[in-house]
Image (cartoon, rainbow, N blue to C red):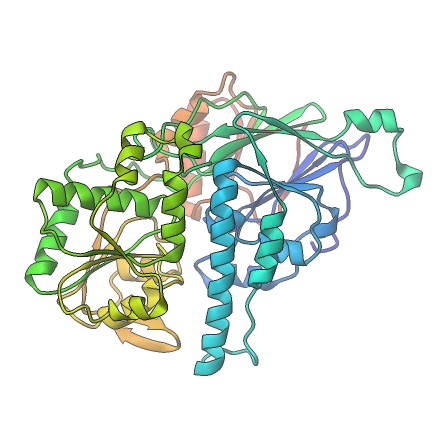
Length: 485
């Protein structure tokens, strides 16, 4: 698909191509073409299984220089993490995002690039890469260029994406080109700070991309707003085949696991997404300490990215998205200890006293949590608390499924520590909440495409949509292209 031709000229219906998050949860990329405009919605990295991760290293699925603009639904790596690679390959157009998304994406992209450079160097020194020399997917310099392309849009603002850059002989008159292109509107989605659903209107067609949808009772963020009308909907299905259990405000499973671990003299490792999940986990731990449910042991945040994200959440500039009581507690969160340097981080592997370590990444695919697991998993006194969705092919999913050994840095590590999965922390809408979101559209959509889910979850949500709404439903394949009438 690298030689993807231009579509959407006069006389052709607008088209939508699924270049990611089709058949899997990660790698969100959707290309929309019409009325002389070419827009990519999301530009995410693949994570998890090798067959998907390998796509990160292939040539971009569309000529980057032909893309007029990118619109980001939010800043998670599987929605924005491919941007530096796309920019290095030739993207010159702007990347539109809300203020919260732009602030978080700047942190996430630079951190991702730093980790990739670090891992490539570690592989070179350790000799465990198949490549000689091992190289990062992109560098910090590439990430800086991608960050410079970010353009901040206001809540509910409408952005116009340009017209087709065709050869002069095929150009429409200038007056006609002024009316060409697509309009993009960002609508709060309540998943993480800045997260949005994105409405694209082009040549009489309208497509609403859900992005990742939050839950109504997010402990930090205000709820999402009602979705606007659209003829076509592209909806995520991360939890499309299940309902979340009722949230326990007392976090009893978490408290019991921490108490058990401390009695054994062990440490608790919490792999947590640096953005949003860390904030929620810290608030829960603070509640448990304040109520006396767990002892007041040292709580370490060992993720430079998580610390940077915490400051963005605390920034009054984003107060319109944050629950006032949560903002107050985040600003006065006491008792935290932070590991900034690599040396401080390594010392936490032999702390000498029980402690809680909150560290990224949330699925243990990279970051400092990997070396904590490598040192602490072999000891039965320790505990790993899994606090979010674990994609197939990730170390977090392997731990969740009970593996006895885990491969890290080319070596197998025995898993003797206790592993506990917590269901209290998901900020993804479940199946019922996804269906309710579609039901809130002012008019039923004509077509719904179900993406961003494992195959069983996507099929289950598609069946639910068919049962409830009178519309066409598809679960797209990777690379599939559909017309928008």
